[in-house]
Image 1 (cartoon, rainbow, N blue to C red):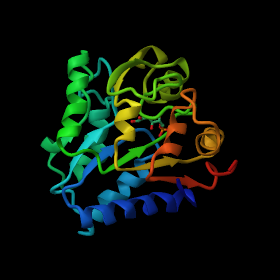
Image 2: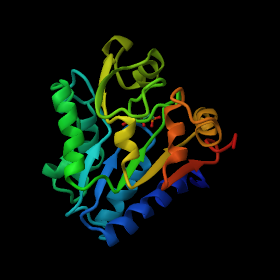
Image 3: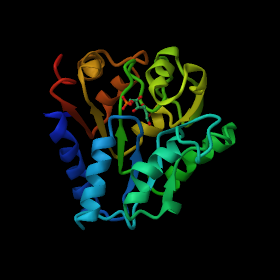
Image 4: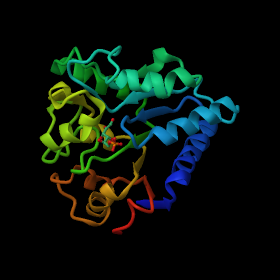
Length: 239
Ligand code: F6R
C-alpha cells in the first residue's frame, strides 16, 4: 500500500492527478466510482480539470460501487442522482457508458449481470473507495465474505445512522442496498482509498496496520498489489 498524506484541501487535487495520468495513458479506462462526502472534492477537481481541457472522459466507462434499494435514479438521495449531479453531467463522459447498480431490480441475476458487465469490459482499471466508520467498502459491512460479488445487503444501524444526515429522518434511510462485492472490488487493477477527517483515523489504522479480517472489510486491501491510500492529516493521525 502506498500512503499519501496531505492537507484536506490538497488531497483531492493529488488524487485527481492520478486520474489525469491514467486517462492520458488509457483514454478508454474503466473507472470505478464511489459516492458519499469523501469524493466530493475530488469530483469537483475532475470537473475543473475537464473544463480546463486537462482531462477527458470521452472514451472512458464507469461502474459505481453501490445503490440504495428502493430508490430510483431520479430520487435525490439515490447514488445515480448523486453521480449525475456531482460528476457525470459536468464532465464529457457519455452517460450511456456510466453504470450504477439498480436499486429497483434487485434479484440475484441482475447482481450477477453487473459483475459480468464489468468483466466483459476487461475489468476496472481504477476503483475509488471511501470507507465507513466500521470499515465497510462499498456497502460490504463487517462480516461480509471476502469472496463476495455484487449482491444485496442489509445496512447496519451504524451505517444508516451515519447516512441519516442526507435524509429527512432515519425512517427514510433505506434498509438495504446493492453493492459490488469485495471480490468485485479486489479484481480492479488499481484501487484508490480516500479518507478525510478525525472520525476515520481509527478505522484507517485498523485497515492499514491491523489484522486482515472480514470484521474490517477494508483490511483486505493490504493484500491487493496496487492500492494508494489518500488521507488528510486528520485521517492519518493514528498511523
Ligand atoms: C459510497 C460507499 C461507501 C462510502 C462510505 C464513506 O458509494 O460505497 O462505502 O464510501 O460510507 O462515506 P463518506 O464518504 O460519506 O464518509
